[in-house]
Image (cartoon, rainbow, N blue to C red):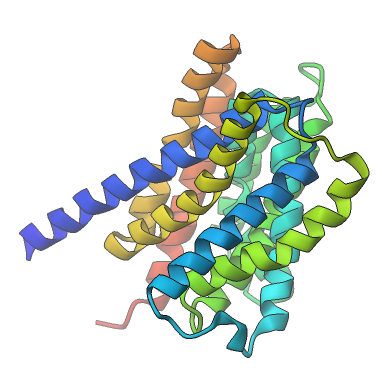
Length: 294
């Protein structure tokens, strides 16, 4: 039993390595194409590439046609909010240090908790209030309003995290009846026309091999990040995956330092660690509430 558990943890770590690499490469690609290719155009090309890949995968697996879903409205809601979140995230990459974008993205579970309290009739408890307070203290440490020159772009990333939280809640509902391949298929199918509608007004044909290289990188890593983290969740508990996912922050901090000469801001690390602690406390509380009585 212990051997099987350790094997699962090891496999989960392997999948999370793929997740971390995917997110970091996606961020580098977005930064490299900043000012060259518009964000809506990147999202459109990403969706187009992803749709072709997912269609090929579904046909290879001889799976039932995803077009037969009975939950299209839920897919539409999930992907509209996910598109908005992705737009804010990509825009934030061009305006803020990479580490700050990744740290603020960790507010997603905190937003999800707040939304559940406000709209799903979950009860306010001292523990949940403590979780939310800890998380928002982490946010204040990162953006430091009044202590440094406040960058309004931080609000864009916080807004993106809010829409990611809505999308994540919808994804959890969809995953009860839909296969991951179907969810990813509709992610690409629905976001494709949305991206095109915005991209057509600011379209720039990629001019070089480097442009196409980074566009391909973003398109592939957008899918691989989702796939790898899904596989990691199948092998390990959510709390373990959340903890490993936090390694994105120090990793992207080093990327920003060595590649883009961004200063290492320890306040971002401290604020991110506080948000991690809040997220883990929230997961622990949820597990205790759902645990059967002994």
